[in-house]
Length: 112
Length: 114
Image (cartoon, rainbow over all chains, first blue to last red; front, top):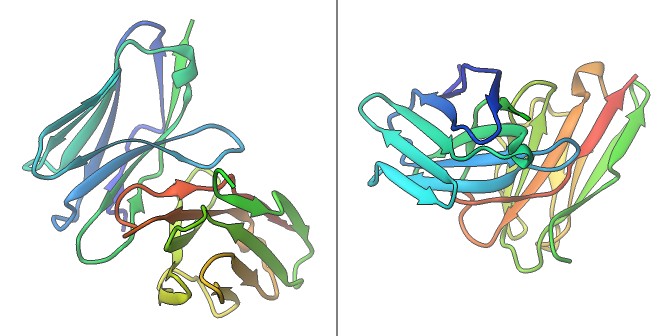
């Protein structure tokens, strides 16, 4: 049973436009959410996170929005750049244990 | 070293062979995690160490999988009698404190069982 769901396996966005990656979760105990980016043949790298006490966190071109009532979060990248082409993983954790649960990932293609 | 390193990067094993995968975490990082990533999937938790203590091994898929971190730094994931379904990328991650926040990942070991 997937606790963290990324329902779009892939997404294509024109360079310079906004990329929006979506994530849903089922476990109401999750209180910390992370986005990781992964290039081929490399490990995932941390991108941005948000605590459940906030509804928005911004870092440069990257903004994460959290809607707790809908159990939904999204990652906005604006403007999208060619180097943003990668697989993006949504992840979540709770204070009940010390591990992160990952979604299946969304492959983002930035088109020239 | 600057980051988490893993060796070997690629491993091909015949079904039934034993394999050992190594992880060198970032120096001083207390927590170390192992994940299995199958093709088209996200990383799935296998096991977790805090220093040398294995605090959670609930994700290990069978008793053929064994992990250790005897001195609280380098860790080894051992898979005995490998099966084709063990083919995956095995990722190691470390973190200074609790693992439920940002974790730093190594490049992974791609295991192919033929």
